[in-house]
Image (cartoon, rainbow, N blue to C red; front, side, top):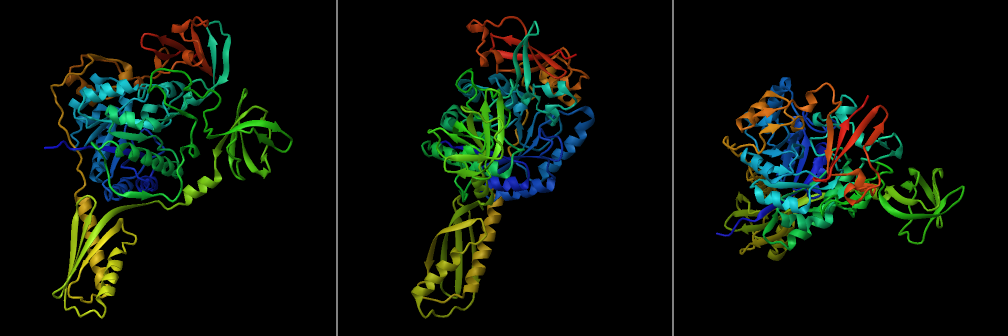
Length: 609
């Protein structure tokens, strides 16, 4: 028998029900959405009722909904988390995305996905997770294509990979920088994002190397051009970051990556899209128009510089050109500029002294008239970080997604029947029994039948073909035809929902041995259920999770593949002139940098006073 084609998924963020609908309408095969508690984005919580609404909407198209329950749990929270998980499962959600192994000891009848916060970066780790019942593993963002390929080859679990959006500079789930700067912990869903703050870089004598720069702030991931390579490496799900982003961001990025992924699938017949239907967005998607700190492939092709955005942690947007001249009223751009901004647009200027922003009042010929000219200097690079016309077009659009159906209408012997078949092979019919008179014009009658049966209106269906068999030339009232269409399409929708792929619940192999015998504080064991899980899988000793400690002083609060030395051209492997210890300082917070050149990693040790 031929092998079943691998189902490939475009996975989109959903801050709420409205964003979930936007994502599905624009072509997402799945969305991930936060529950009311225990999600890594505390500001993107949803009731179980709204999750149920999102599930019902997504399942019409064969799309899936994943609920994020991906924070660490403390002992006094495990029962509440269990209860919430069961409530979410009851909504019909297709999987739970979790970080804490406590969920493996809650007796849940659910498909589990291993959150990227589990630091999924090694083949032996992902293999262990698959043996423990996880259907999918969400990879760490800083991996190379070769590492991704090796992980995919080592496990039967599906591989999910981020392809677009913000990058956590620290290894996911192993960054405690926010916790070191205050009470807010990223592992508890309330990261304060201290990585986006300005820092002074000092040497061991206290001399300033860089002052007030955003030295830990990375550009945004943008792997659209490498989707084909990731498919060939074994990636199943392509994830867009952004549960805190607005609806225009969701619409735009999903529409862009839908096109990119469809083009890649078209030349790979062994792969198939994971959901059904075709989308019409009513605007021209453009990734440069949505929030971006500037794109990077990060380390997909190996460790490199140029991944950080030292001047600003905010969106810079699309490049417009360079300032040629400045007057008291406005400025002009150089001849390489592709277009001029319009009134209401937002601009960002990047200079040697940092980034400044302003709005645009209008243009007079080549002269751009900004709200203010402070900070605008000749030679500054200019970016448009808000395009008013695009925002109006994308925000005012009415995205629609339709399932193609064909219809066959049989008329004769005091009976009329309509049969609909959708693109996934689901079939539904409706029948009318009653005396039918002779049509005065049989050909015109058949045209009327086709027209009435094609009126799918506000349903999810699009009738692409209607075949009419009316050999006796009988007359069928429009009201009868409309009733047959409504009944048959209603039944077809019910069949689509019934045929939705059920969650995959894999049994845990209790004899599987963890690849580590000793767990450190950064391995995040913060409750007795997780401790029991690891002991049953061969772990002999465990440190208390760092989130349980009252203070992180003296602790490594971040490990990262990103290296400040490499970024500033002072790599120790390449003969740096900058010797001795280096420190990052912001306010009262001070961190000593450690460099592991063998692993090509950097760590931050909390040495705040």
